[in-house]
Image (tube, rainbow, N blue to C red; front, side, top):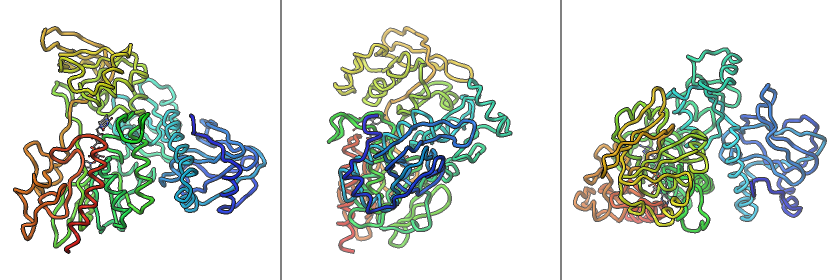
Amino acid sequence: MQGAYPRLSDAQIAALTGQGDRRGTEPGEILFGEGERDCDFYVVLAGHVASVEGHGTHEERIIGVHGRGRFLGELSLLTGEGSFYTAMALDRGEVLAVSVARLREMIARDPAFGDLVLRAYLLRRSILIGLGVGLRVVGSRYSPDTRRVRDFAARNRIPVRWLDLETDPAAEAMLAQLGVTPGDTPIVIVYGRMFRNPGNAELAAAIGLPAPSAQQAGCDMLVVGAGPAGLSAAVYAASEGMQVTALDSVATGGQAGTSSRIENYLGFPSGISGAELADRAVLQAEKFGARFAVPAEATAIAQDSGYYRVRLADGTSLTSTSVVIATGARYRRLDVPRLDYFEKTSVYYAASQAEALMCHSDPVAIVGGGNSAGQAAIFLSAHATRIALILREHDLSEHMSRYLVDQVKRLPNVQVMVDSEVRELRGDQALEAITVVGSRTGARRVLPARSLFVFIGAVPCTDWLGGLVDLDDHGFVRTGAGALAAASGPDGTEPLPLETNRPGVFAVGDVRSGSAKRVAAAVGEGAMAIRLAFERARPA
Ligand SMILES: Cc1cc2nc3c(=O)[nH]c(=O)nc-3n(C[C@H](O)[C@H](O)[C@H](O)COP(=O)(O)OP(=O)(O)OC[C@H]3O[C@@H](n4cnc5c(N)ncnc54)[C@H](O)[C@@H]3O)c2cc1C
């Protein structure tokens, strides 16, 4: 909560006063409503304003009351999503209303003020996620589409309240009230509008996530993948004056966005959550003029008379003189029977706040011996009752950094099982238990587990490249000297570092052959690729 609801000083209010309008409020007056976009930035000067969830419905609940010096809103004010709650004046008072455009100018001009607002907004988003103030999802824990919708919201850091048809009496009541049957679920309520089993693109449009638009059809720099590497490329390219479009098939943040706490990223001695890092980077890139499209999956790339044309899953295409491939990697799946079946409900490849809410008070199992498994164990230990950390290695420190090993060993509810493999997933509709076999002893044990978290290495997301660029034997993109052998520039151009065998096409981050698989390395490569893209473009 620290920093989520600061009060502006008189000096800060005085500085803002010249940028906006002061106006009186009446009790019950709505300053902005649920779903409203581009609302003003309000500072309370006198009286009180309440943040109200479900205003005017039988579920109405006050989630906060703000008095003099407090400012209203949360992250959606800056990201363009609709507001997740209503702001209502409680008494006769006064507010200062500043347009979002003016607010952005103030944030850019006054770093201390900018940081205060940004920090508060990021924390408020996190509080909303914890409270479940936002979208309503009614669906069964056994439904793959319910899981898909919840995952999509989680990756995009959209707050959701889930009403489980199997256990929550409020779910039945809600369906009756909406006049729909369990067969219509999952039902998603977005800003009061009902959607029956919406696709991710439909959901994104309803929430107000940035969709691909006609304006983005041509640009100087197309960044495919918006994890740390792609976000960094977008920030640096836009800050150098390039017209940049960055797209991502799921959400900004990539793998890092699924990490609860990154402790080894330079400049954040107490760590930073991947979600916060991603949100900050998106705002920074947008400040310089970068445009985002989410969800937008690249399905093919081709060279087309001096341009590269990237086709998207929705059938549209984008063209660009330079392309940064930053599609990273996705987690490898466990080789165990019935994984497909349980993946729809009980298997996770991320451990963020959203997953923690899903497995609250359950026994869980984590598979993997690397840093992401260690981080997941530390984070989930505060939520799950018991955790089995299962790894093939003989020693926890074989692939895990020392700082994580020490923390994991101190956790009373984490049982570390070395030399072990998961062989069986047990349960009817959802996971109930797993069978673990000791690789040295052959001993079999059945452990209760409602959720299984898998962190066992990654495979590159390069299917969409369709042979345009050279890949190594494991499917990662070759760059620089590594791509030299396959160089095919029109005049036999030698690839620059981070450049593929296609001039002007760069690969950065985890997708690149030989990359360090670290956030800092991905960010560094994203920045460097832009510098090299200028170098490549210079002779032309
Ligand atoms: C749980 C976890 C914890 C971690 N903790 C740390 C840590 O503490 N410190 C550290 O240094 N590193 C950590 N890492 C590793 C780090 O997150 C990665 O090295 C880093 O995210 C790589 O960044 P990237 O941008 O190259 O790729 P990614 O993060 O993988 O991002 C790639 C993006 O591309 C998108 N994409 C893929 N295919 C397509 C397509 N066809 N079209 C459009 N978009 C596409 C994906 O949706 C994704 O958003 C962790 C990883 C995980 C999973």
